[in-house]
Image 1 (cartoon, one colour):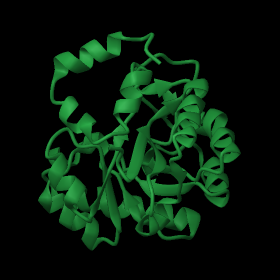
Image 2 (image 1 turned 90 degrees about the vertical axis):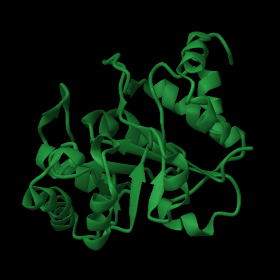
Image 3 (image 1 turned 30 degrees about the vertical axis):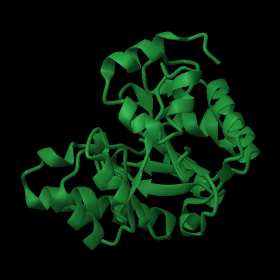
Length: 240
């Protein structure tokens, strides 16, 4: 049975790169069309408490400029309000060889229905930070800088690399974030049942059509525990 809320996690939308975290604009549109055909309702994440039937939300991590170039108009075409998780200290710079959105682009996106969330200040693995002051800066300063930039509340946080523990979770909530978005590698049941979290499903370049469809179901959480089966499914490129 399909999950009531499906939150898809993307990174880069481009034809120029072939890394695991980049998919083409054409592929993204195919995903959207499939979801609509399967009667998934498009919702704004701010309305998740009102969900009555299976729905979907699209998120993007890191704030790559290729979203502005290739993804923004496409999602607007389908009246989708995505969330982009941004690291303020990376704005206008390069990360992993790709250009990050600049200030004017972020403001334009925010003014046109794109929800901005925090992805920490500098994209560090939070669980590896031992200095309490540095941790506070990663969580608080990222929120403050984005709020000052956009003159609006930043309610959503996504930890880089999904690195989080109970202490970090508590600090995130104490600083005023309403929800934590995560794509858990394990402990799925804990995160899925915890009201502080919104569980996401990461989408990769090598996800074929069958695997994408399976990711829309609860069964996928059991399936992904078996690496051999996942590897086999990814080889079935011709399956529709």
